[in-house]
Length: 251
Image (cartoon, rainbow, N blue to C red; front, top):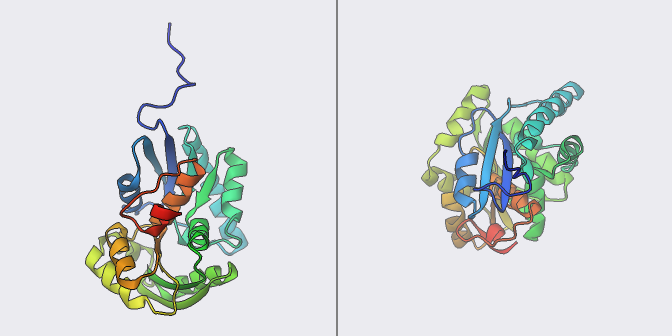
């Protein structure tokens, strides 16, 4: 006779299990989340095609169908929260539109990276932001429009240009070393900004956030850090985590 243990927590995820949907080439999101996860919190990922058109009616329908399917797959693992860990693919207006849809379809708490960036900047009290991305100009403009629509002023914005020659270029992003990420982001920062936003869940940022905050005196928000923070809080975990910026340490 088997023992029914369904009322018990899983062995490794006794506090929370965080599910995350990432683009197929992304190799930074899971790595950074696993570094951030406190004891008793586990990370469970699935991959979904990159949706580059989320503004047309057909493009948005395709995104919703895909994200629903992958979110339902994650829900079978009994995860505490489901996150869509892609900045560009979640820049819907309003920011809550996509996570609200995911919640209706799965019955689970859900977050997206774009939503998390908005919530993180608001939690830090920042309205004027400098934005550093690995993206090309068209995607940068889309992100700036998204931020403006949610009440933020983009006082400085620069991208590395990846993606202008096609989506295959995005595979370069996770290969940009921390030293280059630091120098690039520092060059985008300006005294007029109340926070520095480093966008893209495939951009390796954990090793530069603290240094940039110390140098600029301003909070630094990154895509993976913010999404992890919001997912953790949605799961009811309020631990203050050192070493990854003011957001996780204080908010």
